[in-house]
Length: 362
Image 1 (cartoon, rainbow, N blue to C red):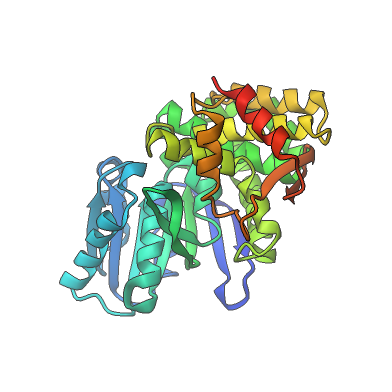
Image 2: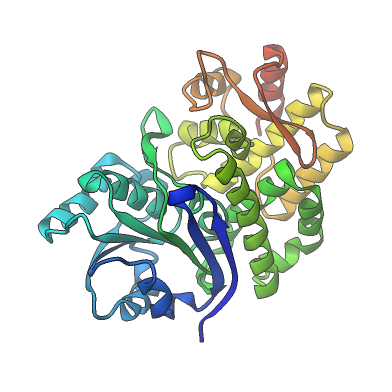
């Protein structure tokens, strides 16, 4: 029986929407109908998730005109070419502007479905149904959508908010341990940048999370969604403080691009990137050695890498130069003044950045 454990609201005026967190929510037909305006529904999933959960969702959508698109699974397929498969299906089935797209899957499916919804007939409704921990605590909330380009990750996209985010934590039961660890990177990130108390709770409950304890998972998902929804509500389009959510991501995106999309999972790259950002913050004298150690140890306890792969410092700098955080030719990094105290800075020594890159490669 479905059970909504928590409901949060992302406050964006007329673009506000709820986040539902609970168990067996894929079977909650009334919950889905509440956010579907008209009869046409396109469910977008991938070859891994669809065999597990597509039929359960389709059963909840009975009585509607429902079509489906099943895409290949993996970050390397987050491209304009694969995105066109969604548009092809929408056009072939003659979907109109009153349709609703549902993203059933992880962050790649959520980003691509959201971008398709933003573009199709200049904007149609969509619902996020994230099935991985990473997407539940991060990518499904906030309206960032898009695809990758060979020269940079997420460089083509749009800010476009969903009608609702429906998080069924039961879907985590089928998540491979490596994917679970990748999601824990974003959970840890939220504590590092905004909430020292939450970070301490994670230190005490990391094994519970890795063991898929339902109460611990619900607490972590809610805690992360609360932090992210507050940041997004205050800065929807990343004009200021929302950029704090990119802690570890400038380094991490360089790893993903440099190694080839999909070879390192996003969360794995962010885990190593957060360690690099913490190390750089300590080198700048902004973060204590004790706090750097706590961060590194928690990331390791989550089953994540704490050092990047063998990319030269020159290659890192080249890749970071095309990051979205570059403004007017200047690289901005999210760094730390303490656990729970992040800041966005251009005011750092390039020599210290280079020393950090040279000293942390595996």
